[in-house]
Image 1 (cartoon, rainbow, N blue to C red):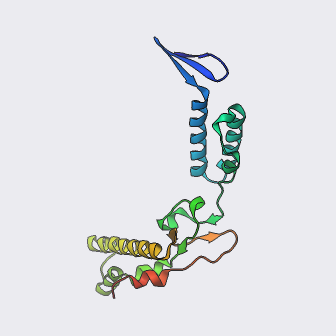
Image 2: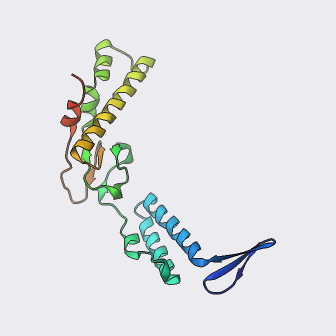
Image 3: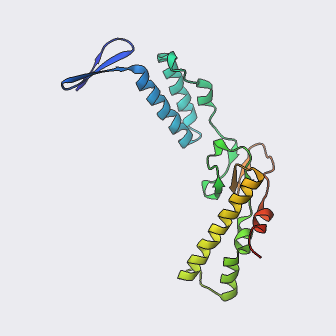
Length: 180
């Protein structure tokens, strides 16, 4: 098995008895897609590498139409820990109008946690674990509902923007979704 150079844009691959002709643009487009995917997944240091790869690909095969500008501008201005994501978009690069909630306030306001405190249920017991999961599910569903009602792209426990803009706090609206 080996590669036989046919011309500048076509390669013959010999797989035993069957030669295979492939256009290099196919290889470049696959590599470009993989590079951009990795850039979006890896975050801040990858866009520089992705832009370099995009420029290399564009110079080698301009017909691919690799957008060099978009490859270099994938960094995000949002600052958040992935553990603070509750619902909605989780990629910081995709955010447009996220909201924030005070999770400890919501946690204590759920009927399940109130029952645990009132009845003295051990959080490590089977019933305590079940109630905690139900409280988590209740908060998630209420956050999703308010997110949809208010047209936010996502809901976070904590999130900031580099320019210091105020992030809408929807804690009261989420808490209002809990049964009295």
